[in-house]
Length: 188
Image (cartoon, rainbow, N blue to C red; front, side, top):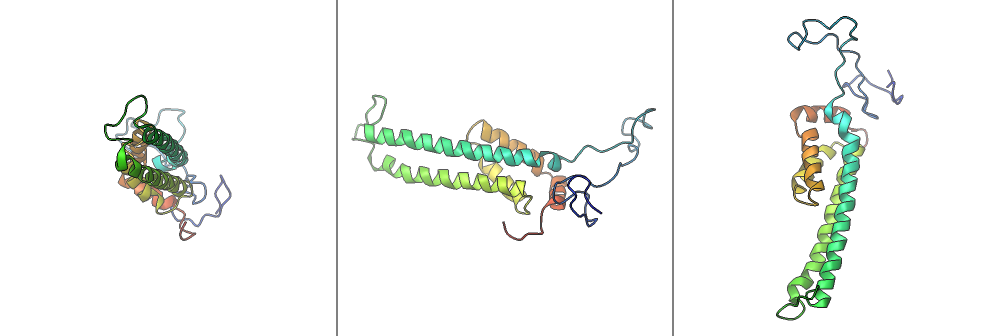
């Protein structure tokens, strides 16, 4: 059997294509009793379940994580620019430090800021790659980075964190992600 969307071979395991994520099962039949109708209304097409949450939102999540990586990098570079200006100018904007140009504390902040910016940008890009390529570790890394990103690049980071947790954290999402995860290639 092959996927009607992308033409990839399908071995019958799971309900989704491992390449494109398309649902590969037919219509589910009439809705269960107590769903709102005793029977579908006349002329109603067979009941088809809406596409699952993970499949529907995985690509947009990966693109939003790339956007967060770009914002993190820009925020870090702007922060380093102002920190460097502050150190060289003795406080910047007409304010001066009482003990010279900011001392060793502000000078030590430069490598810390650079390291934090590079590491968090790289981790955000890894989350985007893992989700886009449907790697088995992508869901776990996205959840961990979502928790770490709650306060970064506010409000975009907080919004993306909440959206990521809404899509990937439920147990049903874990099962769905494991079904569509690409386990054919080890590692990255």
